[in-house]
Amino acid sequence: MADFFDINLLKAILRMATPLIFAAMGGLICERSGVMNIGLEGMMLTGAFVAVLGTYYLHNPWWGLLCALISGALVGLIHAFWSIGLRSDQIVTGTAINLLAAGITIFLCQRLWQQSGRSPQVETLPNVTSGVNVLVPIAFLLVPVVWYFLRTTKPGLRLMASGESPQAAESVGIAVDKLRYVAVMTSGMFAAAGGAYLSIGSLSLFTRDMTAGRGFIALAAVIFGNWMPIGTLGACLLFAGSQALQVQAQIKGIGISTDLLLALPYLLTLIALAGFVRNSRPPAGLGQHPTTH
Amino acid sequence: MTVRLTRRAFVGAAVAAPAVAALPISLQSVGAQDAGFTVTMVTDTAGLGDQNFNDLANAGGTQAAEDFGIEWKVLESVDIPAYVPNLTAGVEQGPLTVAVGFLLTDAVAQVAAQYPDAHFAIIDAAVEADNVQSVLYREQEAAFLGGVAAGLMTQTNKLGIIGGQRIPPVIRYEVGFRAGVEAVNPDAEIVIAYADDFGDPDKGKELALAQFADGADILFPIAGLTGVGAYSAISELNNPGEQWVIGVDVTQEHNAPGFEAFVVRKGVDTGVYQAIEQEVNGTFTAGVHSLGIAEGGVGFEDPNGRVPAEIMTEVETFQSMILDGSLVAPSTDEEYEVFEVPAAG
Image (cartoon, rainbow over the protein chains, first blue to last red):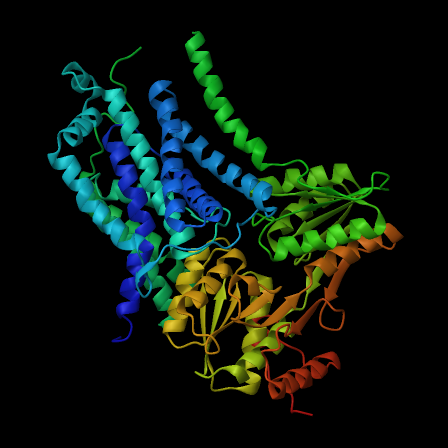
């Protein structure tokens, strides 16, 4: 058992939590402002693709990351335009973003590189220490920043007010729609950073649907974390931890059926949700608009 | 009211656009204009670009299109519900539809029953119908030889297998490899880990890192795009000459130059090519077509000359035993349980 919990397991947990934290912080800001964001998966996938695209053409992964952030903000803008500007159903819009990202990334791979499922290899962002990419500490630093922003700054408090009661917020002069635009675009940037971690941080290429549901897991982490930054971080670590444990348990051969081990992250989630999230309370104004036009 | 309609139209377009983009009616068409007929390939959800299974099948079809002057079309399946409509679209295009992958088994059985006059070929699965040719590979034969080489090459006496999902072709690879290792090095430990996914390379990388950290020095990734992660892991660790990854189905050396020990080849292209050839010549037959080392369907290859000569001799010895039938590599868990290496001749 001594060599079961070692430094490699810890690093694996940190690595696996990184894309979840980025996307979950994005989802948290978006939902705190009162806009549902089921499109995190598509935003991550877009970020993963554009990070490789930017690195491929600009020959520098940092420029690739910047391109990914911009692309995330643009996808966020699409989501904001539909769900705030046009007041369409936010679930439908988010789903559309997921489908659009899945289709368009495959299409562009085919057009640009004549291979529909993956990109060529590109340079990656540096590691800060062996097995820990530079984006890993950045993800963890993002959590206190988001917490500080929401808890203590004026725009942060206004953003939360917009999410709790958009009508009341607007009646006291807060520009709810404008704040929400910024929040949704920021959420796109964060999610895209999570995708970029996968494609130019951990790996060095884009492959189709490489986010493999991490956007949805991040969304679950936001709910599980009760829309609080620290709680959400805890949820991300729990999901990543159970996945890392599952990997470790298979390799150390602890004599449990593989199928059971593969179900472990989901079982833990169910147990945790049933046990701890009795007092789950989403922002009261989630999905509501300030005034009815 | 107009605003409402516009809004709906926007959302409608948003949903429809990717659906159309993701279901290309004809992604590529190769072949002469005066082609006799069209052959359509339907991919599994992994789709083209896996630089592996589906791409190889496409290569076989493209080659056949050039050689026989037929038209070759590929339909990619975005999700499981797309299998049946894609296969049906294939039937409407021409006399032969090629389904690539075990995951399409049920869909092929269903569509083949609806169109008894159309011909189907399915790769990696057996469908019992009068109009379906089931092309099965004896992956275990090549994997066995891979196991022999890996079992003799390991310095740490520990090997890793990374699986996608435990479906029959993956099982054939897995048990064949294990039997090969045990035949030459019964003391070697084999660490097996499944990702439960063929399309998550980051998870593949984590599995590979964990296996290397655990002391394995040669990895056998049977996991499609998930397996690409093993190449990322090995180039990041960067211990050339000490850690290796085995190429599965086709070489992927370009993913981590210098780290691919050898290749356990599976000629998906051969199976597709032969099915089309038979259709062209009017010799299409239903039933199981089994392709092993003898038929050139699978094989052990060392394209970069990294397998030491004395180990290569061992591999060749076992290969001749497989060819003359004195050694039958196990293909299921049950066969693996009772498998014994025949006395070396």
